[in-house]
Each structure stands twice: as structure tokens, then as C-alpha cells.
Image (cartoon, rainbow, N blue to C red; front, side, top):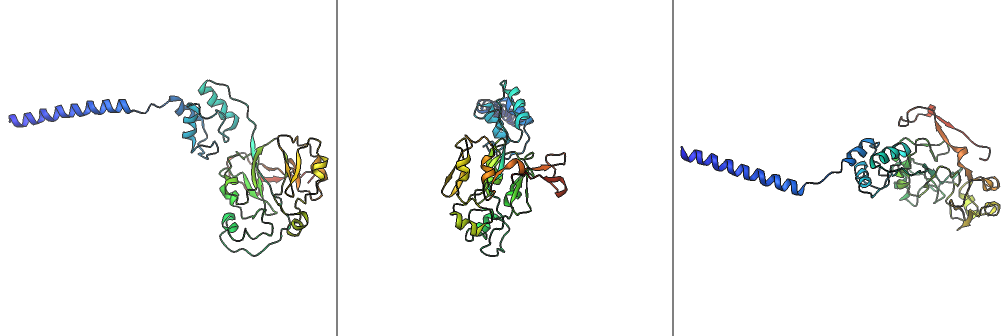
Length: 290
């Protein structure tokens, strides 16, 4: 009997010792969680899109609490979320202009090199001689960027080139990341004038492949009063730090490939910003310049 009692006492002592040891170790090696992190996570959209440059909303919240990321770093939540995070952090949210994706291609009547019958993915098609389109710099048109968009902010246009729905675009950059031709740029929404061509072919060669390429005529360069557009490697390139979107280059472009993007804006009529886009929900307004 005494042996049994002794065993129980020994086990009890060992249990208490192990418990105390675990408690000490747990306290010493415990990861201290900043309570602000949880509060920030609560006000974030939870998209986990990575547009902030971090792995997801949790990483972003931690980076903000540690001072490694700005309170306005969530492009999905934009100003409303930035203000909420600023309140949690006890700072003032800096004003940040909304950015959107812009497709730098408006190809028309593009000549095909061959009939493509492979996987319906722009990246796969690009692996085969640069894709089926005659212009090696232009949009392949299989809609990989549209599929990559988490916010239903893109649709394929009637001309086979993707269109951006600005009110839904969060500038997350997912579409730009999957485009094998690097045709999608993320720009401030106030910058409305764009050269929607990326061809580096000489004008005569480009016109044999596409109905409306940049032909490097330099009329836009001569017309710009702000020295904001120059022809480089047979392509007109806009310096957005100088560009005021005055539209003078748009008016003189002989192929109409320089556009005032405000005139080609896709507007969604449906109320919900995350509702799947239907054809009847979309209006495409075209300006006189285009």
C-alpha cells in the first residue's frame, strides 16, 4: 500500500514540476502580439490579394503595427480603410490618389501569324513563337488577365482587348503580373492620356501587322506643350510626371492610338462592387476624340 501511495506522490510531484517548467518556458518564449494587429485585421477587406506588397492581410496588419508599412497601404480598402487604420494607430492618414490598371493596347485588325488551338491562356500561347498575333508586342486576347482579376474589374471588349472597370479596380496588379506581354500598367486615375500601343516596330512594318499602331511620326511630340511625350525606339512614350492630360497629343495622332482614357471608361451600373459583371450591367462610353 505504501508503495502505491509513494508512486502517486512521486507522480504528483513530477506533474507539478513539469507544469511549472512548461509555464516558465511558455512565459519566457511567448510571442507578444500587439493588440493593434487584431484591430487592424478586423477593418481590412480580407481579400489577401497581396497588392500591399505583403503575403496577405495578416502580414500587412503586423507590418503597419511595427511601422514597416503605411496605414494607407491597402489599395483594396482605399481611403475608408486607411482612415480606420490611422485611428487605430493614432496617426493621420496621408492622402493617396486612387490608381487603376490601364491596358496599353488597343489593337484593331491585327494580322494572325497562325491559328492557335492550344490552351486558352495568354502565357501558354506566348510560348509558341510569341503568340498567334502578327504583332509580337500586342495583346494575345485570351483573357488571362480577366480571369486573374479577383474583383471582377475587367472584361473582354468587343475588339478582343480587355477593358478596365475603373470603379471596381483596386490596383492590386494581379492582371499586370500574368500578362506575358507586359501590357498592363498601374497608374494614378488622374492620368487619362495613354499611348495604347507597345510596338517597337518601325511605322511601315507596324502598319502591316496592325490597323492602328504608333507609327513614330512625332506629331504628338511636337504638339505637347509640356515636353511630356517623346518617341523612343519607334514608340511614343509619355512622361506621367510632366503630363497634364491636356489631350493635345490625342487630337493630332493620325492612327488614334493615343487616347483620352476617360472617353473609353467602362461603367458598371449594378450596385455591388463585388457582384459578378454581366453584359447588361456594363456601359461603354466613347469620347469624340476616340
